Image (cartoon, rainbow, N blue to C red; front, side, top):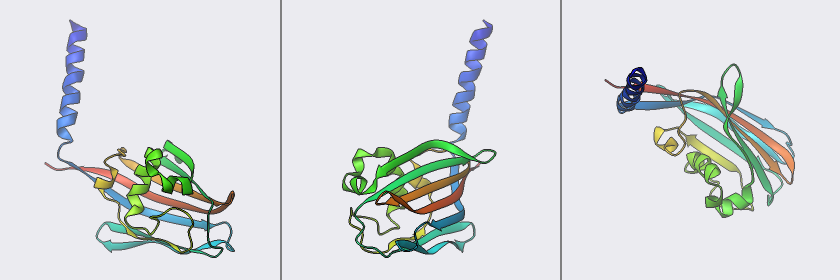
Length: 184
């Protein structure tokens, strides 16, 4: 009898949680960015900054100049970290051949979801070779971009390491947070 009451109570709590989040809205906000060049003869981060465009609205802007073009062999490592007494790995850490990924993005579903977050704000919309500067302009994190990538409230770091011809060329660390606000 007591176990039935406990199960009924847990079920009630779950239903209450589901209905209480219906009026919730997520707030995503960039907090910091770090760009590190490992081979300045190959490429250089010419612009690497966050820009405040309104109250609580921050956009990401990056421009990387390529000096040895065309670039035909690119590998990327994307890692997702959550702050918990320092940044700890959270869910995903993928390394892929970026040229193959851009040829067939459906083959890498998790990478596709992560990449689609910033695709609309960048000029990285084709496969190799790359013979122009890489630009991400006014990227704004919005709740709709994370529908297929649900993450809990907290502080996060997205780390991107870029390799060309099997040599580390650049590291990008982007910090942001997600906060859930409930409307009444």
